[in-house]
Amino acid sequence: MDNEGQAVAVDADEQDRSDILDNYRAQLRAMLDGDTERLGDLLTEDFTLTHMTGLLQPKEEWLAQMQAGQFDYHDALERNVSLHVDGDTARLVGRIVTDATVYGARANWPLQLTMDLIRVNGRWLASRSVATMW
Image (spheres, rainbow, N blue to C red):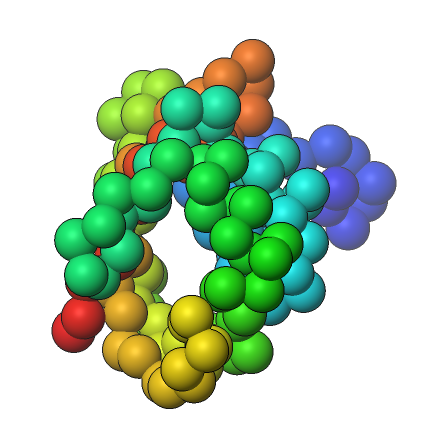
């Protein structure tokens, strides 16, 4: 709404960018909260995560390992993010510093997440994420 109470049109591209960034940040928040149900809702059913080690993990396996405490995320500091939207697909590249305990070893990792997202029934969902060091 503007100052006079009139509805203000939001550019579709701007709205898509906002929705995609909201999904990305909600994923980070869900990871920190250990909320695998919320995290799973932000991902497609066939989502895969490629860890910085090169391990390719399907969604259900990753979420199950989070639930079992094998991935415990303590903090994620966002350093920068870039985003390219092309119709119903998008690629987000985010750099974060992650404080996590992975298989019992706690460390801080500077991670770059390259994430593909798709629009599904009007919602942006992540379909693939690749984590590398930066």
